[in-house]
Length: 249
Image 1: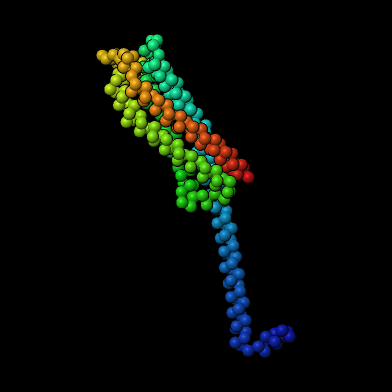
Image 2: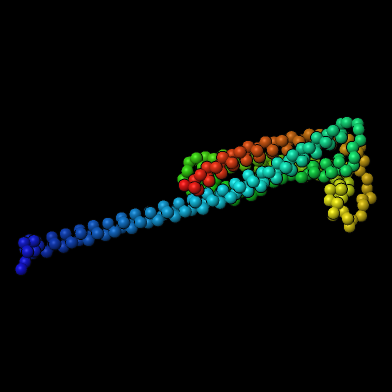
């Protein structure tokens, strides 16, 4: 027995039935495509979130390297060099004698410098063109930009300091003091199997205007490097705090 609806269906012209079927099929196809896009978008969002979490974890590790390792070590060495500069300036301008071990060891530390900005692969990646867009949190993006800017300033002053040491401080030391004798004093274990130096370095060799001026310039550059390193570390601590908060969400 046929139903009333079936009779109406049979009464429709063949072209109208075909058109309606095509429309239904088209709607099904469109709905399927939209659903597929929605699923893809959902998966893309999940992948982007996972990628962001990985990047934030790597950024946290890199910040920890600076805050907990490179920062303290750079402060330690900078403090030692600053003390040595003060001792040597006193040696140059005061009349009393100082033990050789003291002032020659101080000379040995003068060329030493800590490369605080040696490697920042994650920060460089995230602050390159389009890199900040990988991070959804605007506060983290802002702090990251600040850290990158300060690292650039530190790098500039570290480069100036390194050039000064290589082009002025070390050549002066080579001309005026026995660096081999200094090395023997600074590394007793290393000196055990080596001959004593045939040269002598008298204290008058460092009591010159030129050396005094070099010490003043060494101190000036060290102060600039130390100032901007400390400011960079403060911003790194702020950034790490925000990153860790985001990772815990």
